[in-house]
Image (cartoon, rainbow, N blue to C red; front, side, top):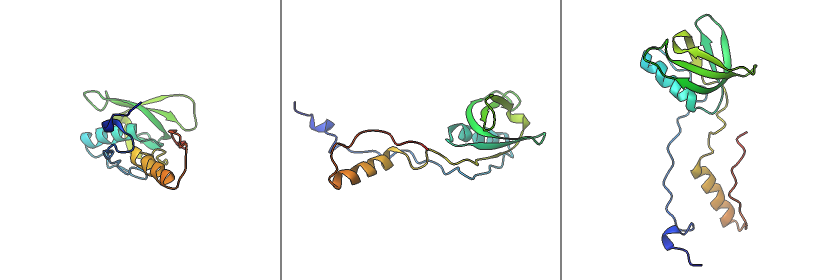
Length: 138
């Protein structure tokens, strides 16, 4: 079987992946409605735990698995798996006083370019039968 030269994996051009914003350790301002919405959009895409401080003083650390955007902050909510519980919480944006990206981003440095760089390093070192398997996230 002859490979189409345009599909030869040894010569394919690789486009750079999207840059990931470094969020680990970030504490957003949450001063305006736009900042609140933007921060929770980033929290949803973050692959680590966040810490939410509610206006009543309660602190919840966990993983944001969903967010619902409504017309107002009271109609918008973040959904989180608390670290110390099996229940899912839904917290209105209007009830949140603070947000911090406190957990380690398990996906940091594990993009396509990093994988490809490691692949080529192994291949250039003479390693054979290099499998196309993802690395563990933890």
